[in-house]
Length: 105
Image (tube, rainbow, N blue to C red; front, top):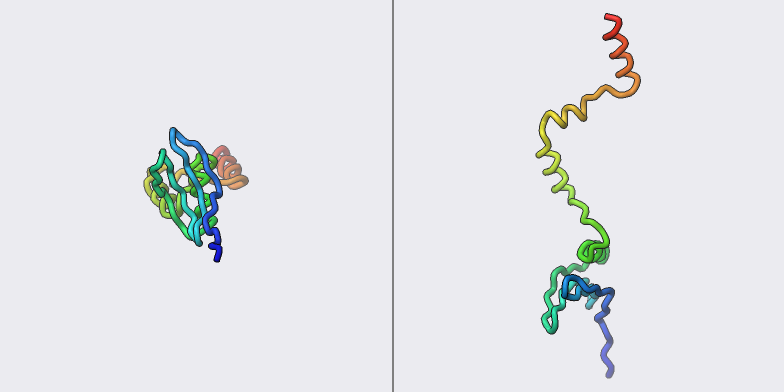
């Protein structure tokens, strides 16, 4: 009885003297570094979309987008005055009226 093939190489790329390989094997997507005979799995997931995004980031095709928690931390670290300045600027017509009233007083 013949055995079915479950492993598929979806992509590979030479990076800094090693080969990076993206593969699918029985429901798992993985990214591995291959140096000679040594094979090191860098990433493994069942989520195809997430794995494909990680592959693109890993090979340098795309930049990694920060997760919502990371963006929240960055915003909290911004100086307080800068946030106030950005959030409390009069917009459009209100700004013009404010300047007219100031000139007239």
